[in-house]
Image 1 (cartoon, helix red, strand yellow):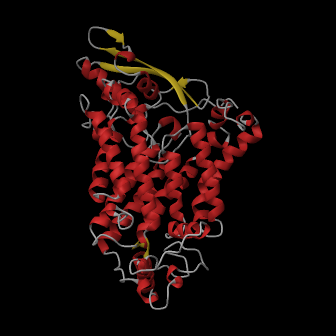
Image 2: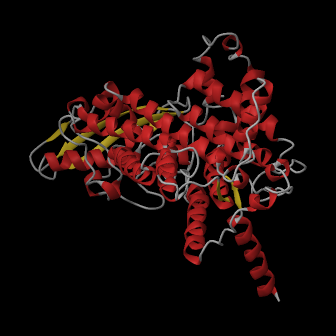
Image 3: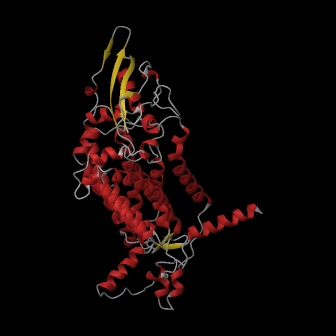
Length: 488
């Protein structure tokens, strides 16, 4: 009995996921994504590429990918140029799948080169570019569709829209979950950052007022936790989008964050009905006095959304696009019946969703304060939650002598700053120093301040870090616990 009910529900979900919906919204997302990627490469060329990947003599790769190293000479510059060109071809929908595949390989390669430059938005870009290889976002408004009629289609399966909504919703929701920690609930580090940005026009002079601090602390947390659910409900969707727009524009003004705020603004439009670009275009045509588009064979298949919402995201009570067509054209609006996703696709989607949900929660099962130990911090959407300042002095010893190392001889100032408060990078650097000096023992005296606390001893200074594995799981006993309280 229960098996029959579950089978029936799974069948209903499969039917809903296979239902064709307008491909307009995902086509707009494809264009926005490609343009954002092209702009992102311009932000790095040429200065940051040189500072991050050409100038350093040592990098901090992710431990399982230590073999990934920067290309010599102008290789890194050419890599970024290629990424920019691929962004434009993705936006144009030209050689779409190959462009997405090549872009994913290059952007993930760059991402893996040095964990010192980990950015949540670069991680998101890698995830999205991987998904886009398999999603038919080039069926509409693309060069591929113009060149190859077999590719062209005004619709995509509803699961394509919902998968993108899920992936965009993950940073929002888990960003809110990450804010449920003691420091954030007490106003740090946002209070310190606001005090440093009083030069922001109009509103900056209020950033040192405690009511403003508390409003932004708890407002941003609540926003992250509820915005996805409000975007899914048609009555609250416009208001949620307006708040999201203000939120991202304020982040762009205060913190920069490269293309992340602009990409998220574009991606958040996916929560509107899939045919929203066509509706907007029709309204603009009417407003400017232009003649309405004539329905044709391709147009008649454009939107097959019924007057109910669930799979396609259209608002209840809104007229389906087929309703505006003449009676003779209406039957064609349904288009060919889409097939259900096969077991392999369904299984892959389930695994993907499960990983995206569980990975950001792993720090809850690891003892210690995640912002201090960094264990479970990455790939969990812990955005703008901690600021660390500290120093790390490395002492080497062998049978003959003991000496200290000048970190500036091996690291750039930015690398040294981002290494001092990160245990994994400290161990990687210790291994590097030991290899340079014929297996010498390496110990460190690291003192770190977290979110305005007084500096405290971070790593056990008696442990030979050259013997600590570069990759570990769970809590490391050589990372000292955080005992220093917040100043407020």
